[in-house]
Image (cartoon, rainbow, N blue to C red; front, side):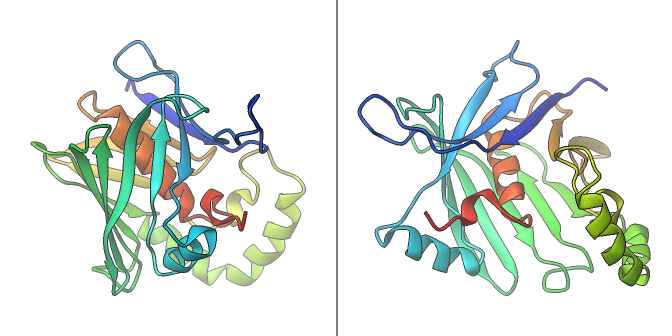
Amino acid sequence: MSSNVLTMYGGPRRVDGQGQAKVAGMVSFSDASGPAPSAVYVERELPPGGTSAYLAARRGGARSFALWADDQRRERVATVVTLSVGGGVARFQVLGAHGEVIGTLMREKALRGRGLRTRWTVHQPGGPEAVGFKGRIVWWWMWWLLLPLMTVVLVISVFDSVPGNEGGFARAPRRIRWRANGQVPLEFRSKGDKLHVHAPGVDWRLGAALIALLRSFHAGAWDSVKK
């Protein structure tokens, strides 16, 4: 199955010639032959209260990101805003450069939403809802049963695993496969933390926003830094 593979990278803090900090987060696209560029740049968008206000809202599940065409913020391509949070459910909207709605994303936390696993719903205007669950239920049961052993394996594998896959087998299941009308338009693979966009009709800006959101809910999330 041919797909566009999205990968998010973080980088060191850099400044331009005027001393302005550049955008460090980047989402790359494996296939830039269509409408998608080779990369976009993503950063958290701070509220009036600055970093402390963002982190306070973040603890409740809120997120706000800006996606740029380059690392010097010359052209905004999309914005991620929080529509609502509460009861373990967070709803986000992805807007285009002119405020048009690109799509809606919803995260329902495990045991707080509608199931035992975290549920992600992706909806693009004019298309069906795609629903994905974090991990397979059988792997979750095995992971919990073997948790004492997993703790030991995790410590060892942190020092003996490929870059981007630290923790390997000992990590909690994170793979997500979205389904819509019997198809799998999107798939997040935990090895390498890559988002595979299988359906050509998925807006590339929605894909970039989705992987940024997914990575913001992982351990050591890119948007959780205090500076």
